[in-house]
Image (tube, rainbow, N blue to C red; front, side, top):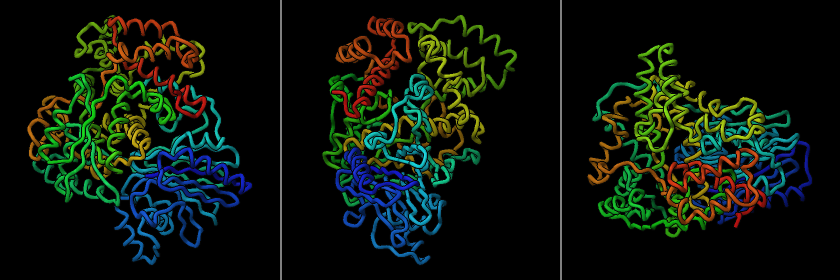
Length: 635
């Protein structure tokens, strides 16, 4: 795992000046690769690399070249099938000087051109500079595990693993994007290709891009998850196909020349990954678990049962509300505002794991791939059936009227979510899914945003981001369409961004077997009743766990990787939150009505409403804004 950065000036540049700039940009990524640093500079290009050495410790230095220096690469990630691809390329006559996966990418590009990414199995973001053709080829992995930002200004094109690297080179401005801000305050994260800055973009997942003096080609997709080939099958038949897939996904992620372990939450996904590791590994697996004082958020007991059953080398850590001590660092490492409070336990489990290992396997992807978000998926499926049975002409006036008059009080029984149900039944599937995904309702959005900010949006809403994914896929039911949207929006821009930044903050590589594209494709082909049945999600994973793991794993309720944020904001985090939201200069004034924000804070403190999700996001936005002003943590 590494950090990559670079810039191309097609008009030519002073190589001495370019060398100083690329070193500053590379140094900003030190945490992503503390083992080695390398740069390449010619009359047009400057490439920088920070290395966290995992494979071919002696021969994998970057930037790396082939074809007598014609192709130069900087690469972040791991290619799990590099040995097989290298064998194929050798048979085609290509020569290798190292045992690294980096050289495999270079020779694959030399042999297959832009379509080389279709042969690569792994997580990656890379840039290849062709000195002869004067083109830059960018690529990002299928689900966006590794980040890649870019910016074009005239003859200058720059890219990096993180925004802080671009800013360290003085290559990008700091004008904020109103649509990105709207996405953040509505969803809690910023969706690709937008970034917080108006002129900077993220390369979306499963895309390549060719850059030349003539201009930038539009990002080109090379993979898309299909839900069209679902076939009826029994649970036994599905398990017979899935078990070897899972074990192979784990096996290929055990490759490396450094200590390796796993995150163990006690849930289905990470427990299955660790069980497979334990059978495939010749030594006890090093496992790391995070817990809380609050029993509602604590899975340590179940994790301990799994660790004992699998005889792992187990380590535990309890997170206390003093988490405020590291929120500034979290905001700085994100580079953009991200409201996901599970970044706190993710930070701590990565910090703990790095004491004993350099690589950790995780259970990320199980919920999205196998129907785990039942709190959203199950009601959405039921509502979709009702919508399909009743004509819009009947639904819209009836349920629309009920939704309009039904109060949104937090004191009503929330499991019934009646106001949202009525509103959802009055509209279409895509709009209903969007309502379930956001944490700032449309009425609250209009109420909280200032008039000036609403005018800047010019009618934009984040629905424009979500809807194309929901309707633009080949799934045949509401569950498949929901999964496709989550995989392409929430998972990529929230979950995986969180894991990447928190792990790289501690120079830790995280690998996710359940996000192997073969497993995602298998999950997409599963019938819905092998994902959600009798109100419970991840039917297939649950059945496999019943065969491989103690009963405590399959019987435990789903908790998610979350924190007791509501209580923390009323308690130990209250001074920090009030200093950011009520006192002194506040960046959110440009977007939100500060009087209404103050009213939300008082309601939360009084316990009359629970606004913890929005208030946490607002607090993280202010911490991000403070860090962004100096490009350093706001201590």
